[in-house]
Length: 537
Ligand code: GLN
Image (cartoon, rainbow, N blue to C red):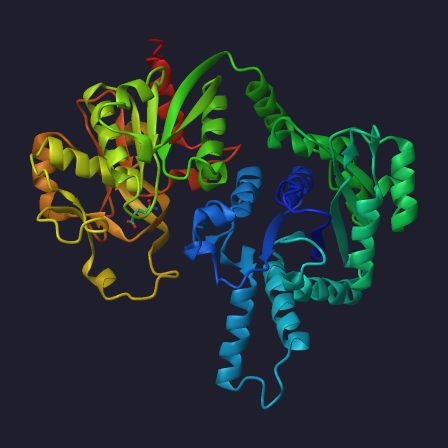
């Protein structure tokens, strides 16, 4: 296509209506017709990125290949599209302001008064257009975080108004709203949608398409009414009914012809019909598993499932690859003791110990690992989970009862997990960890080589601490080997215990790379190992 088309997705009425999933579903439909599509998220908060946020605030922090710490919606974009995102795909107000203020200090604005309009809005517009540079994409879908009317998202909405004006038919706005069902009246109500479109109109934006979240189907009459009051065509009122899985949404949007309406309004000829065969196979398998397996996820944010979003989605992909349903049992590591662990893991055929930061719940994770190591239960440790496996082995096999990570105990005599010298000098917290994709060399004849079937792999990192190589020989002699290494820095990336049926810890985050099209091999093999020994005692 000669010029990229821009699609904005705004939200009204309430938050959490699923703008990310609607954006990813529309992108999937366009991609399945042969277009190149990318999705971007604009977040209205002042943090430069979500890396410094507690997962309780916005859920998991997702990491891209180029080392950006981003919003979890980028995970959905990658899982749906199977195309990597980058730092350019997630912008925050903090980043926009930081860049404008840095330019002001450099004198770039030549004595001008620096203002929200045009300087902040120009910076936003440039960040949106950057994605279409070099004709990399036919469609740039930009999701605006927050809800229309929020004070903090006003500059984004203003930037959308300006772009719509400048780009004319190369740009459209989809507004996602809620049509609530009032049980007492037995009716679907359109008024909140009317109000939220009015709010958008006050800012100068006429939405082109309305996607209406609803628990009941919208009849013709409701669609007609919404269309009439909100100045949109009746076929541009799209129903988005609650789905049993997010992976159904592309098909629901296809039935509603969302992509057809988008193409028509942007005057784009469809290149070909949808190619969604693989996706529909995936859904079929997802909905008709032939077996089940219970896997424990041991972490400290178990009340908030979004904190481990990519891990739970990876289990869905790996379950489908194994024709099985993975029932993830969330266990809070703070509640685990060496006395109750056996009871907690009853009926569980595999254990994943989650990533994390800080001391809370750490001993529960270590107790869990001792139990699974001694009882031959399949184990996957991710990042802090791998570090805990190293600490547990040092304490209970090497015989260093005070062994720890310097993160939790900087005074331990046996820091088996430690900071590298160059990390010790760093004071700033934001963006200073080992972040993004690093190559890892896999040793032959190991569990890792069986899983990856490749000599070198690339995986994404997000951590400050590392395996302390001072202890490496002792570990190897005692039966925990380093099966994956960074060949440049000699950092240990994967540990495993060959004498155990499936015990593997990885310093990186495989969950960021699992997609519908390419379920991650570590998860696929871990689920397969758990399925081999389904426990029913
Ligand atoms: N807190 C650990 C570190 O910084 C592990 C981080 C993680 O699990 N993502 O090294």
